[in-house]
Image (cartoon, rainbow, N blue to C red; front, side, top):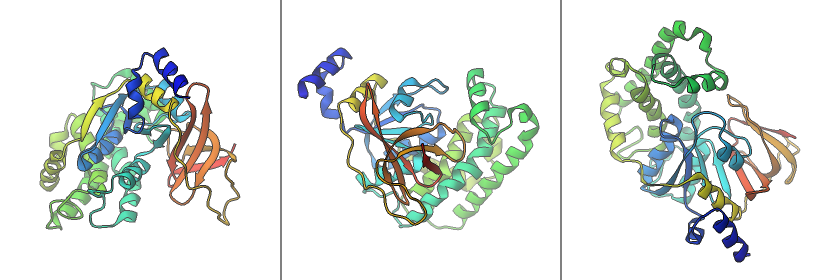
Length: 326
């Protein structure tokens, strides 16, 4: 078997020495992505080594979708032949593999993951609207792609929506400002940063990076400004660049890790090995089809077999994803 692995790597002009890195953390992302910034902050908080694979900002994304089976959102975390989609699940996986320092120093894991729905929708969406509507530096190709992708945004009436987006983004900032003013600690749950801090910070990061009037927009919130400086201070971990073909080769010569199987539940009749389709329930409805590998209250995972990549397992959080018979 090792001989065939060597031949495969030689054909792709990949050093055989890379076989020793099959369990490295590989983040498929693009630098402007606010969702990817969440995971880069986790790498910083935990001081992790990771490999960066840059994916296109717009479709097509052939290497990413080959790895995921069709899922197009960034970021995606690859560990060998296991592929983790959605920042909530990626954070959970990193916490399980690297528990110290914890993303939940004060506990509150349920609340921390539940707040993903607040930050990803109520806070992110008006900020995304401002980024799309006010930033004249965004390439037209990105605007065209997002007009089809973001079903929560009507690009035909973007200009008239800007006052509402400003109001809604500042309203969320005010909630965060009130919380920061009501505590006596450096971060939202204590003296060390947490996943809750990261959830609250990534829309602020997006605004500062993409909205031309960001200074004016954030001026009423001095506590957020001071807290943001503390958030920036712990960095983004130890990053190295990796070509996407190398990442796919690592998947091809790796074996997926074992999962936890399908839990019995009176509200579904799925069994391990069922042919299923998984799709987000918010936007970006790109289906991923495979054999059901894991299903419980925290996670869905499907097994896939690709002619080039071999066997992979693609993982999704249970919250926010539909699973249906194919």
